[in-house]
Image 1 (cartoon, helix red, strand yellow):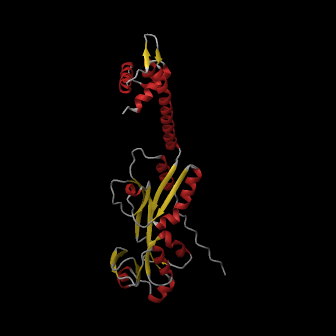
Image 2 (tube, rainbow, N blue to C red):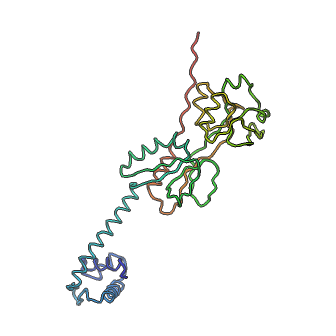
Image 3 (cartoon, rainbow, N blue to C red):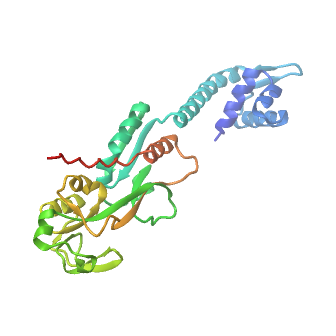
Length: 297
């Protein structure tokens, strides 16, 4: 098979009408250019150029071959330009994976801004409460919440998400407000049987009265007075502000969970990934609303 690079070299030699000028443009020696053209003619079995001491002349076969090779060289230049343009301005599909809650609460404004700024970009957002295999499943970026388990991925920290213990005023009025040592025997809403919760440095193995597989359901059940729930702050903060839920065991969160954007490699990182991750990093947490002032009687 004839290397496409030699076909492009032949086009350049014809255009420059000189081995020397072609060599200067490519930063190689005249001898290298001459040898590669000679090998190209041997592979083809035809003479492409007539060489004299003063100039080069294209043969009839060489002229026909030049037209075809020039078209190929133009396609290569076009492909390179498209790739370089793609590095400067995101083009094409970006596939993003995110946990359901984070995606619903935070990613819509980020994606909207990204698509508005880069009209040739497209985004596919997949919400799932599992960690995908980025390369195998074809994702460019994924949001991970909690510990990072795959050291082969590049991770950029976006922030930390607080998790809090909450219960409704109605539940607390009926069952009392527990301290950390009483959590073991309290009515709790969990995600599996016999979870271990930690509050104020006290670890308690709980036996939930209700088990769910969704944080929003846990929060709704807590509002309904079923029991004490341990849920993300972004999920319960509105209910806390309007009095439907109360935070238990002091103002410190039950835990802080790191939030990272992860992607396969820094090497030749596509601009669409870098710019999207930059947009994620500038995402501000929702500002807490000021408590409503009480009207004086």
